[in-house]
Length: 384
Image (tube, helix red, strand yellow):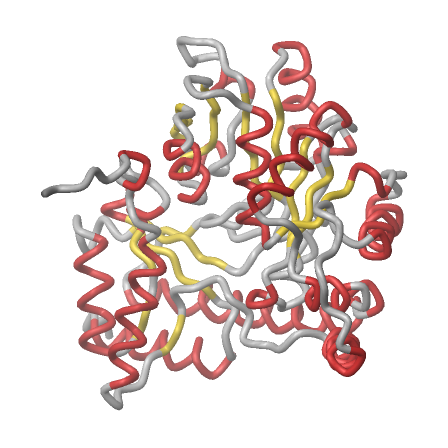
């Protein structure tokens, strides 16, 4: 007897997770790995967050919370928007989630029906298109290049042949690190409002920028759906806690979905994360370290023959065109890991059309690893 397997599971893998698995096997065999594959800060969570978690454990009061999250946490997030952006966001519009990943699932399910069409830049975060595909929603890839700073524009959207139901933007972007400025954000938000396109803004790398501050979509359209997370700026990846700022028409649908799918976000993480907004100084020190790592890669990779690099305005990634070195980025990354122990992610994860000639390096790790990785790559590629 052969049992049926649902079609929705037949989506592409999240390749970076496969790279992490291969790196873990190499480490288990006693070989070293320099981890430039995963967007995970090597720094720990802020001290005040850890202290708050210890207090919560001692109190041993870790039952379910409301599906939308603890009111104290949601009020803290509202205060964050006032502090950072000068925006008055009611706590009622804020939803705590089990990481930003759950926020994507909830927002896509609440905002779109099967058959709807949702645009996003390519290269872009692969989970957008893969989650949409699993839900029966059509991802519409907008092919962007360096001339667009790898971001969607109104001009590019107008070249699409059919109407859109949604647009996902990310600034700073994963994998390119490029950003949407205030003028461009206003143009996109206005276009979406006029065309009745639901705008979803992934802002999980806000705070990790190197020249200009990131702007929130909420500043241009207060009814945007914004997704953020404690994972990146606050170095809390494994705590699995994110949040959304939700337009009024989606609050109750998202609440019902969250109740049935997740019950509530992790209670311990919520109690601890209330202290994150007292930890800006510690987080800013981490950003300074990322800036140093960024300079190392941007300055040293060209001497190894990897010369075509995206600007990396924010986040902690360098996206590189390696067409002069390979036309198979998956094999190239596998061989790099096998030969010299440097793990990075093939561009095919982010761009199914052109990703065979691109790769992504993460510089969220230790500075010594960035220096060592550049030297190994230079020797491996036999550049003088």
